Image 1 (spheres, rainbow, N blue to C red):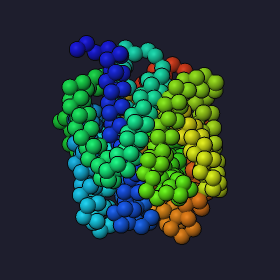
Image 2: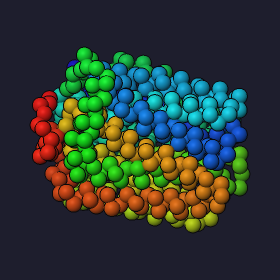
Image 3: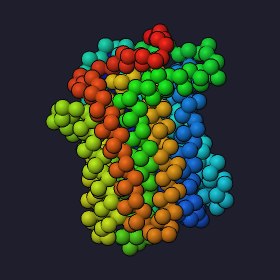
Image 4: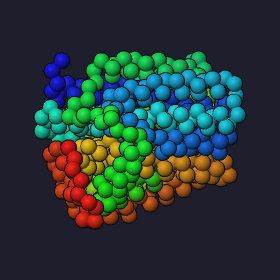
Length: 431
């Protein structure tokens, strides 16, 4: 098979569709599944926090796997790990296992997702560069988001109604089966292009290099640093809101076993993802700076979350969920292009994983804290608090904007060679 930008993007789209379809089969019922297993709100969101903690703990090691042994191997390991841990979730549910077992398996579930984060996006950007792609990265990310939205829409609706027609464990088993199919597709279609794995490296030395690279190309580049500092607030609030909306909508609807309605949350976000992906390239042309799009999304999203908590009407809340999902999904491709324009190829998987780690860190604190707020004061109050947490990201995006980087103005989306070396860091050769 001849490697061209078209074949690279098709592979990326297929894998994005497959992984999102698999993941979303349980997104609409995950919180209800945990509560049905006998966990309290605090324990259910603490289990989710352990999943997020797993993403934080394993981002560094799996980033090393992607940079040392290849992005393809990292992706394949992710599908296997997620399929196995999804099966373990069903076992724990059947056994009504104690909380500590949920915590352990949730950590391992987080491990599975970290094999994807950073590596897949890094594979795409490097492969496009190697095959001579000259178009806009926003366009590729936006199309992938649309396809991911289609997968999420189908998966979330199917998962909700599968659970309603059978039981809450069936969508998890179907998810594991879809991941096996994705593994086969990736093994056949995916090849590392524009990147040579460093398989002779030593893990501990690579870990030290990761810390150095995260500092050099992330923390000491102000525009990247402030964007990453915003991530814990946005990520922490968003993951809580997404999962807490499932039981909250059932409460507003008045039927605790209407699992199809619970799946509506993920379906709405999926529809917003499709529309947001279609609108993202157009929205980008309406703003001179990429950070303008990010600021608008952060502000509108925070207000929408506060109103979700303040309004008690089912259909009004559904409309607010649409608004919340749309602004973030429309801004996501812009953020991806902005961040990729600030980091070099060799450290791309590493820095993207570190960015994902920062977003996950917020979820470790926000989920159990807001879950406890839901136990004590109810879901509406927890959403108001979540909106306040989300708004704390705005000052950091403003600081990133103040750096006036070329990536903020970029319109071609061509991957950058990387930011200049900070003056207080010894210059280092790279590829």
